[in-house]
Each structure stands twice: as C-alpha cells, then as structure tokens.
Image (cartoon, rainbow, N blue to C red; front, side, top):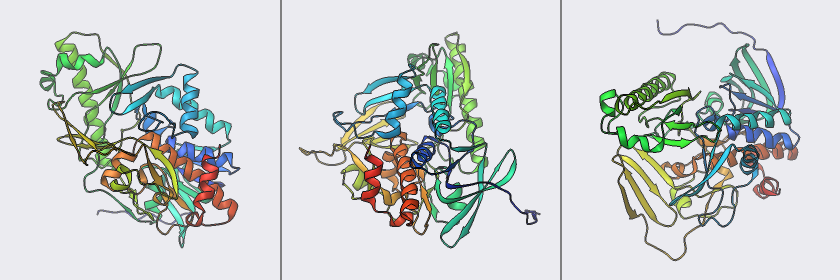
Length: 438
C-alpha cells in the first residue's frame, strides 16, 4: 500500500478578509503592511514562529545597497529603508562597504524580527504563525480560499485577493497555476550564531578541518558580525548543492548535514587552536536561494537586467550583480561589463562579459508582469517566486530587491480591489504613482 484514503470533511473558515498573504518573510510582511495602509483587511500566514524569513529565521543578516551603482542616488526606499532607520535607532544595524559591490547593511536578525512584529500589530494584520498552506479552493481562474494547517488543525482563509510570498509556491502550485524550476538550483546554507569565531580564524584551521569532517575543499565559512552588545558572529554554513528545499526529505537532510558541518568546524577550532568557541544558537530555518518560479506574463532576462533596460511597468530597482553559486566556484557579472570568478580555493579571476563602454547602466528594473501568474485573476506572487531566467534571477533574488516586490504586490492588490479590476488589468502607471508616491 502506497497511499491511504482520507474521507471528505468540512473545513471551518478561520478568517474572511480582503487580502491573504502566504509567507511571512520581509517580502510577505511588506506586502501585508502596504495593503493595510491602503485600507485592506489582511491575513498573513507564516510557517515559522518568526516573521522575516531569510533575514530572521534563516539568520541571513545582510541587506545590500539601496543606491545606484555609483552610490549617488537612492533607488530603493519604502519599507526597506524605513526599517533600516528603525533598527539604527537601537544600534541594531551596521554600515559597511565592499570594494566591488558597494555599501551594505549588517543587522541584528532578532531585533529585525521585533520590528516586523511591531509593524504587524500596528496595522491590525491577522497573523497565523506555524501555519502552512496545504490546499486552495479555486473557481475558474480565481482563488476563493487558502486552506492552512496550524496548531488548531485544518482551517480556511477566505479573501478577495491573494499573494503567494512563500518562496516555494505553496498557494500557487496547490491552486493549480503553472510553476517551473531551473534544472540546477542555487545551493542552500544554514547559519549559526557563535562566540570566538572571528573572520581570521579560518586561516588557522583550514588545512586540518577535513580531519574533523568539515568540507575540506570549501573556501571557508562566511562570517558576519552580529550588531549586539556581546561579541557574536553569524557563521554561514557550507553551500550545499543539489538540494530542492521544497522537498521535505531533502530539506531535513540539508539541515542535518549543515549542523554536522558546524559541529565539525567548532571541533576543529577547539582541537587545533584551543580557542574558547561556542555555538550560541542556530537558525530556525534553512537559508534558501531558490526553489520554484511562477509562470508569469513576462520572464525577466539576463539581457534586460545586465543592460539596465527600462520597462513601462517597473515596480522595483536594484544593482546587485548576477551571482551564480556553482559547485566549482562563484561567478559574478556586473553591469559595467566586468566578470569575476571566485574559485573554491578563494582565488579571484577577472575578465569581461561584454566590451568596455563609456556608459554603463546604474541600475536595473523588475517589471510588474514578472509577478503576474499567466492566467490568475486575483493572485500575485512576490519574492523569489517571480519569473526570471537563470542569470537574471541570480541577480534579483537578494532581499532588498525581493522586499520591493512584496510592497508592489500589496499595493497592486489594494488598487485592484479599489478599481474593481483583475490584477493583470491594473494600470501600471497608477500602481507606480501609489507605490512610489510617498
């Protein structure tokens, strides 16, 4: 026997609202907040106990530049900028600059989660934590309800508009709208907060970590400071390739292997140096770069991104380079035509993906059409579910870009209800006016 039969049952309606957002990452929270600010009643469903997704539960505590490629004009504002300034008031964010990629922000993930909690309370959003979308009720090309399972059991949320910010297409795919995957997915990683593990410690143990079971051909853990009174560092685990983290068994295997590697690293430092190191906490979620993409009305291409081609329905801007994490190393393509390859041995090789020109684009744009599932009438996607080809996605996937797609989806949902139109028929100029008007 490979299956069992479940009898039909009635599912109670837990909440009825204007908008239901599946996924409480910063992308999902920002979608919910922007919609609530425009008067919508909003439900937000999150599978973890922390809001913020990769930024908090997965402890990916870095946001990239909000400015153009020259660092002169701020191109990303909205809630990303608003939240950074709130964190700055309590010394929970630190500014930095990298030579090639420009300014960035290191933040305290726990403090960010508190700020997101405040936004949810402040805007009266109905929150469902430890809730997973397991089914959808669909009539024609409209979703009528999302079915979730949480600690109270199986329940439904009725809404007039829906946003899937789950990253894995939990609502999109269960509603039967088309989704697809790249043949080779970006790798996953898993983070650890630790004491005693500074950036320079890797050089002291890298020749012997293999003896302790740590991947000996890995170029070394990425270690970020965690803005806090105590000395803490956020240690990024090895990139694990070949994992589809939308599959429960692969997700479990990746988390267990990552924690084994963290344990091996700590043991190597203790055994080789004798340093007083300790794990303080582990992330609540795996750091995921990619699983599924919605089949949308437009697929963003690498040519559009790297050449900064403008679009009439732009809803987000960015400068982060194409960043392809392959087993043999990391390839970065910049809008100025340079290409950088960082091998597993840490060596940097520079070349050009296009000839040098006098004028390079200062930023790229993400079209609204990349958030519109082809046939859906009242569903938008936000975050890494957006439709983009291999190289384009490897540039736009970072959080400061994805946050903007959440805000755009929230505003679009409110305007579609206000104007009584399908989300795909919304005038993009009107969307831009409301989205960026403040």
